[in-house]
Image 1 (cartoon, rainbow, N blue to C red):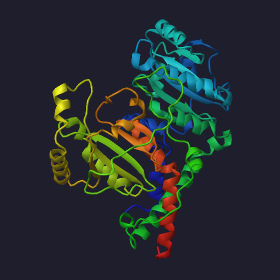
Image 2 (cartoon, rainbow, N blue to C red):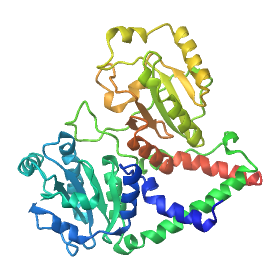
Image 3 (cartoon, rainbow, N blue to C red):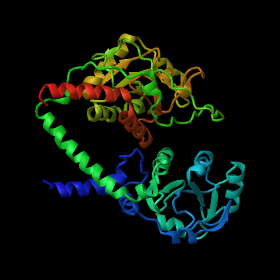
Image 4 (tube, helix red, strand yellow):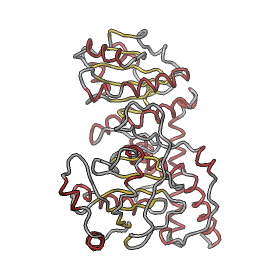
Length: 427
């Protein structure tokens, strides 16, 4: 058994890579461990000397970045995947430069001239530099393009190799700090680790008396619409079918049938909802059932997972299979029941032959029959509005889910009511 001091040290060491702050690291395995050791340490200003051909401004130095937040983006103009992030990074630069954000695009050793042309076409105004000998990439353990690194106001490498979807979250977090607050990050993390350890012990003590999984539905006062509007929700994914759209879409309402659940409609009040889409004729669609059930078991206090059996149609599915999915509801109900019983699932399944739930995907509305990649899911907050959508087992989706559960005012209101209920029961 670990002593409290060893437990605290372990939590503190692993915290940066754990995504506790909503920032998801992209690396895994041994590389993740090496990058984690680089985080929260001073960024070596000599690394800037490894770059050449600085464009859109002067070469960075430790002095010029003092008190600023620096985002390093590695990229290559000849790589479509890497170049595709330029508009997003340009938006970050345009929106946050006035708050002390510096962005530098570090180009691959090859194709520098082509990269400059791609940047010009994208209207890029942030700093660009050429890693002509790949020495900068070696220093930061870069393994592909694009990779993102964030240096905080105190000159520490705060985040190493994070997923694209987490970059703005990391930028907001570091811009919101003073130099002294950034310098004191280790102390704050230690305090948070102690708080989590104390909370874990308190929760364990409560569980010895009251099983949180079997708490009754405790009445609570639902938050106002203004409370939800004041919440900062995850940035939704781009609309793949309308990339030219500049204005963010308003969140749509998750609409679910009132009947067709097995074994019964779940209690959703004060909880986030994840609905994933599947069909017994599509093996890829139900291959994630075990993962979704694990998610329900891990987060069941604050989350409801529903597997919606829907007609599936995309470019990889032919007309015959589309017809097969429109079988008699009684037949589909039997198959759905068999699926749930065979897998001993904790979460509810839903027969939705009309596709009401799948029509709730914001980026697919207005395009006729929805066409989606598989696996696919939508995430709704406790007020029933869709806040995120995409592959439910991806790091970006999990990051969005963690953020919703952390910040959702309805979840917080329900938890307060439950805490009061536990207190009155002697917990």
